[in-house]
Image 1 (cartoon, rainbow, N blue to C red):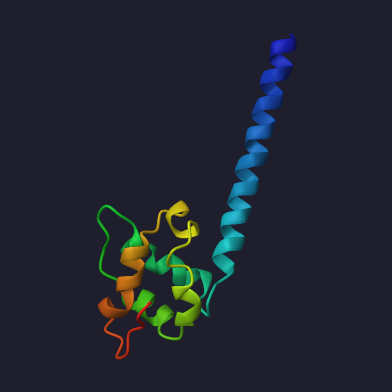
Image 2: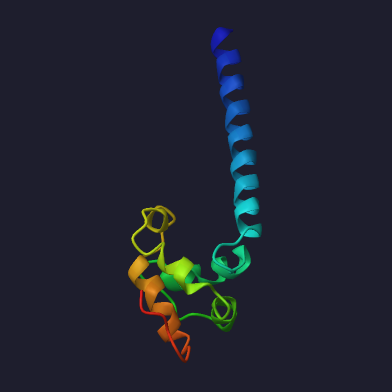
Length: 106
């Protein structure tokens, strides 16, 4: 009987964890950084995720068009990007791939 309650409690905790993680993903999508919306950042993720990054989409490039590049460059050596599955080297290539006239030099 004790195992039943323990299993039931474990399932309930797992469900709470799933709901909270789903909520935090939605919150992070709503927030942006460096003048780029969370949605814009998410549109660029396939282009900066190894092992087979895709070319940046028009939506990604549009999202980056008004970015604060000084701010974004400050993340270049951060452990934050790799922890999210983002390759910093691929991320730094986006301005060139988007054909921005004056790509930043981080």
